[in-house]
Image 1 (tube, rainbow, N blue to C red):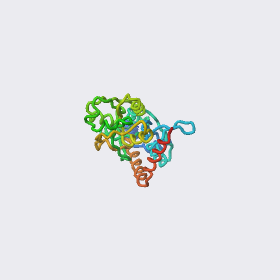
Image 2: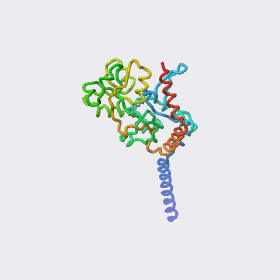
Image 3: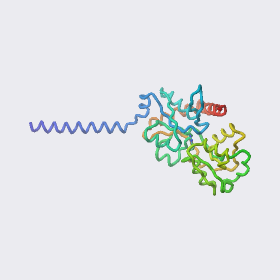
Image 4: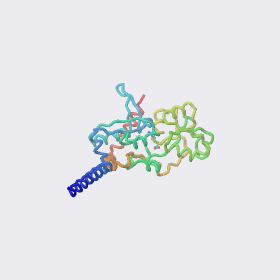
Length: 274
Ligand code: ARG
């Protein structure tokens, strides 16, 4: 009897040990792709204030977020055989939304900076950018040198972006104002409350094309260091399988020329928008 008891106790311990082991194993397992397939939805976090990457339009009386990033995300969802859900929040909170499992991926014209790389994973790059200063129509000639011509000027940037870093470092003596949304910055520029707004070249070009009487691009050359040039898709660091899958899809879209077409489509939609 005594010996039997010992065996029972041993077996009980063994059982607990196994359960703990599988539970831990499960937690560590990368189910990132499977989870998305199971819930039949890919959730993309974005900040729809950055044409042509993401911006709202009204279609059939309904507000909808479209843009280059959204079209790419839709392709990824299609390839995974799931629906795409776009969650629109402010840019500064996107990384934490991803880390807190509120979204599966972040696509927001987001550069894979060193700081962000410490917190989340990034796909291969699908677009490269440079930075420019958008100014009021007729004033571009005042801004030829980044180091001197913005002195005592008020320069708007989106909070927590690479533009904030660049403006603070390079526009000597400027009063840099950070806000959470790009359209408020461009409206303030138009009204003369700001003297310049730093955005990426693709975004600047879209604003000038759509509002040629309001804005132009300053000739002052801003430096965009190599590590602030690449736009990528962010995933959680644990979601390696999803990242791998995304890279494969991106490579296919690049090769087939679909990426370029999606950018064209986004730019056309933006310029036709009311
Ligand atoms: N590319 C810049 C960055 O990564 C700005 C991105 C802003 N994106 C947006 N959807 N507002 O910091």
